[in-house]
Image 1: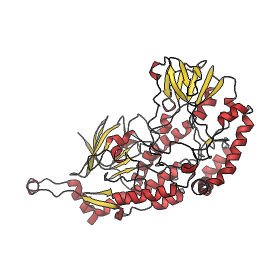
Image 2 (image 1 turned 180 degrees about the vertical axis):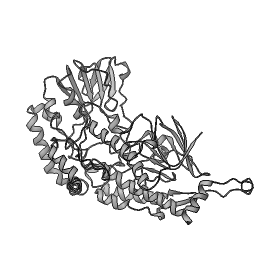
Image 3 (image 1 turned 45 degrees about the horizontal axis):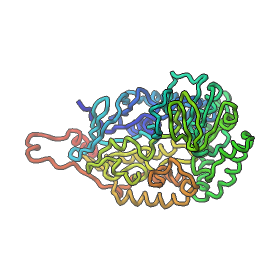
Image 4 (image 1 turned 90 degrees about the vertical axis):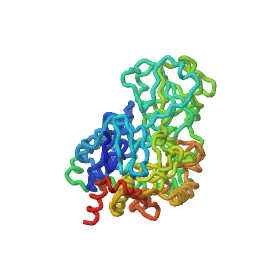
Length: 513
């Protein structure tokens, strides 16, 4: 038998748990959090590879409503962030709402009942509103490499690390040079026999100024909570001041690029290796990576850097694009995620019978990063053009939670059985403004190909402004940007049979009381 709830939240990472907390703070308890795994944490549960840590300072990479005075380091490791999310789950009493082992297989809009029919691996649900918080970093992407199926050794993605497979004394191939790879390489280099790094595009890497947070600092934050907020505010302000260099004046990033070159030169003395590791695009076009151990690890005698990327596998022999070969016992893919082609979009069926993937076939777009036209009462957290290139995504998530809260308030004010469907004209107008601003950003002009861009070369991932701007843009729902839908009137036969929606009558009484 299906469970009917007011709100179904999909995913229990930062976005899903944040939505659950906000619902409770708004006085809404009739909701569930659908999670395909057996625990909370999202990407911080899935990514447990050696060396996994955040590249955003701890006090900024946490909820403003749940400050943590006890972060152990200025940049926290995966285990600390996951523990923080478990703590948030307990403090805000979210566990009764969690439904583990409930992967969404299909969700379909029912225009007659004005609700979503959700089929999951753990049962069926009806929901008046869906908040999709699956996140862009949830489904790993492994490239289609010819001959990969002939490899006799172990193959896994960095986000699905096989902790039962010991790498000691093994010949390991690391494919990719993104944020995960630059943490994995120095973590495993001392234990493996040989490490071959298949690099398609070198990243810009700045030093990671990480340290332990002293006991005195933590005691101060516990005794005087405002000092935690002050620290967070300073970290936020610095990053807000940096935004214009990324969005309006990419030429100002030249100084940062010079510092990155100096960082490389200090660690890499071999001119040939330095040439391999030097990017040919403007710094900031891809995410600037932070590590003080990546470059030193690449100079070790058991490490080889192969340019051009992995192009073919012939048994245990890996062939690079330049024709060079390497033997391997293990292949680790650090090749990112399905960001602009999220699998969840294939499973969401809107008002006209089309899936979200079909609606987004020419590129993702959503009103204020939240609402897609033709998908009533469906919202996404970390939706199109809400990503950041230099700050904390928690800031963007909290802004979208403000929007979600006002969305639900507007439905209450409308009363009865109602739904809001973003007008196509409003969605297109918002997206046009975003893309107009995107044209001069470093992400579009920096000369690189990044995961920020979709298959059409359009940046549908990054927000081209400050987090403050986005917060102001999502503070309130403008009903003029939505079409208000009402449930079809009951037929006379249904009225005589006494058929009615008790929940609707209760809501009408609640609104008029």
